[in-house]
Image 1 (cartoon, rainbow, N blue to C red):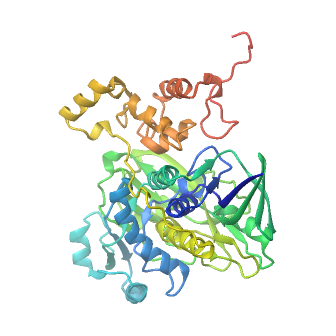
Image 2: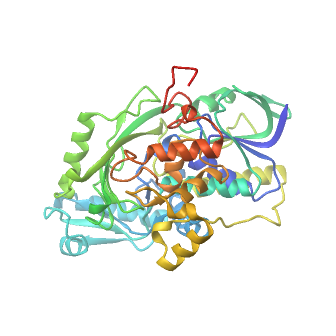
Image 3: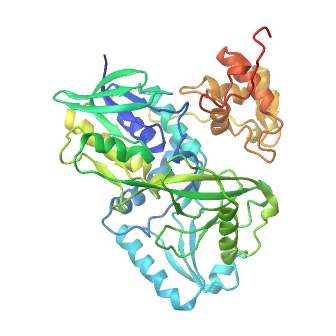
Length: 479
């Protein structure tokens, strides 16, 4: 039976962040993921907002981890090289009678430790963001907020963790966890493993694993949020992330540029029973479009290139569940992590890793590599830099995805790095092939050829993501 110091369940942003910070220590670490790649669940379908932290209730895990994580992401973008922009956020007030709510959130932000906030007058707001509705009477300006690429952040954590010795196993579903005197036995669909410690970073399923080892049950309701994504041609409609005043279901429908220059609108919030239901609905699309127009009246929805939906892990207690349950030592929860979970990820990862290291007396590695080199982006190179690169590796001169100007060399890099892309979605998350205006309508066949060649498998085995999503079928076995 394979034995590890720490097994992390889930390769989303929380699991990968925890693996990265744990890899600073002299420990044997394994990350288990039931899908074919990192960032395949909640982490892949969200707003990509780095929240300032003014709306979480003071003293909660959400407040503590959000404010700390916001600052950490800003610094990590420099060392792990993922797309990030410090664009700030504006919380709009559309009714003078509700202006006291802005002051309440400002005061809450001060308690949480958010810096540089300011309440803007209508005149100041419209000077800053001319596209905002004339009906807006003021706003809370939070300049420490930002936008990040969720894929880029998660992949950066995973690659840096792997470079420092963490192992990843994909298409491996955890079925059972049993507490023993010496640690835990983790049963998967690929065999049985043993670990001194377990980190539960399984997103929507974190209540299920928690309840396997603790009598103090928790419960998660999947909360679906739908989004509309528009072309980069209109990505500069607003500069800051624009929020309405929040309601009981969350932060409301935002309008924001993305880290890659698109324009994003969403999400709504609908509580479901099904933890796999990520379908978009016409009613949902109509709802978010109408609500967003109240704050930003000239959103060019005719420039929409795609829509998508994600599920948030909403816990009944309304806060993150972090650390060891009282009745199960050695099992560390990162459960019920909904918004601002993406922002909080590095803070949660560092917190859990330090708890585990202290508990087992692990020493820090002298040779820990804190930096990670980002992907080569041919489109951003100067003519001289591009010519030099193509002379060394001609595949960088072959453009596969014309919408995003992604070369064959970049796709090869996405596959060859560790952990590398094993599917079309894996390539897309790393280098944005297929993310543009045509949504992979023209570049898919060439990407499939490259993936088949690099992995040494037939084209009929190339998947969009998980097994069962094969792109081609051949019924004639003689072909």
